[in-house]
Length: 458
Ligand code: NAD
Ligand code: UGA
Image (cartoon, rainbow, N blue to C red):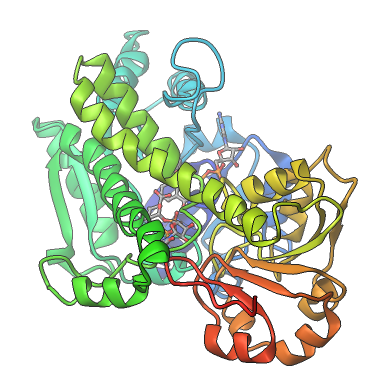
């Protein structure tokens, strides 16, 4: 069968897989190929157990895979055969050398750019799908054209705004699709090619275009704004706990002003996920490189408040439980960085688990989707940790429960049954404010919500 367009994505991760599955789903006239250097990941994409859990993803992969969606490890062949190449490789925080712990590690995209250059035999549109520091496209263009082999490469920026757990919904019905390009004849033509793809299912007024640098920067700024909202509301939780105010009531009152808005004001244990922290640190590093220290300090504070919030959660547990946790059994309800995903990257649970182990706690971890990742994250710390999927069995015999992930199922549990099975006095620390605190207190628990006064029997 002859397809209208051949589209390739390099990087079959949380972004590459679902994004390409959606393009294949909405555009049966296009052939979409996704490649990765990790053969295990590709094998999982080709199996009945996909490498990531995302509501709705299995269904769209099932109807497209083998028809117009293909997963492969043959990167070179795929580069030769496709004209439009999305680059969706990981851009983690650099862990070595200059900028360690702050700058984005660009080695994966650099290798990809060199590979594209080496195996291209015709014109290509290279789409930056990963989140990159501003001006990355400039470096990419330099690498791609450095052999002067006459092949034209147009680099465009098309950052991804999906959130995990709602990726399919976000891709099917995005708030906006942003496409940034060079404002040259060739750059604008490449931009229009991309617009044509998304216009197959996204209303035109939600497809916005800009210059390429604005597009690269907008992605970092969007994540900085979102993370800032979480840190802003979290920054008021200790004050609420001290002053008998209730952060949920405060958030409601503040969020009803449409200039503020009511979304993303859920106070809790702190934000996790693979991107907020790394993207803000990348932004902060960039600002410092430009000598913009005041701007860097301002945004770095968003990350600092987040670290403070996680540490505060552990210290609150320690103080509430008579300043000693040694030998006590604590159950973490949830390990994923948020509900509806199995992803645990930068999950506050990792920090909390490690800190509790330092306090010599016997940990029990329960999560409906993230236990395998939790085991990997805590490799080397296995002594003193048990992993149990059933929350009732997990909580049994424990001194305390700490809610770390806001899985809906936790709010629906029978807490009387759980209370009866626990050691006394029984404690519950609600790091997500999803439980009925008054009812738990009446059941007998000593209840410690986040940003609300504690309810204790002492
Ligand atoms: P990921 O780690 O899940 O996936 C990246 C994939 O790229 C991996 O499977 C890896 O093996 C592959 N890869 C690395 N180098 C390669 C190479 N040279 N050739 C082929 N494959 C290679 O990462 P992700 O979560 O999908 O994120 C990818 C990018 O998208 C990041 O820049 C991230 O900031 C951005 N982003 C992520 C999300 C999200 O929700 N996870 C949302 C928006 C944007
Ligand atoms: C976030 C952004 O929402 C996406 O737009 C962006 O594309 C993505 O990062 C990215 O670049 O990777 P994601 O990290 O998947 O998406 O999930 P969010 O829903 O943003 O949650 C991030 C963290 O903040 C979670 O730990 C969540 O529990 C926490 N959060 C969120 C709160 O504590 N309170 C809130 O009110 C909202």
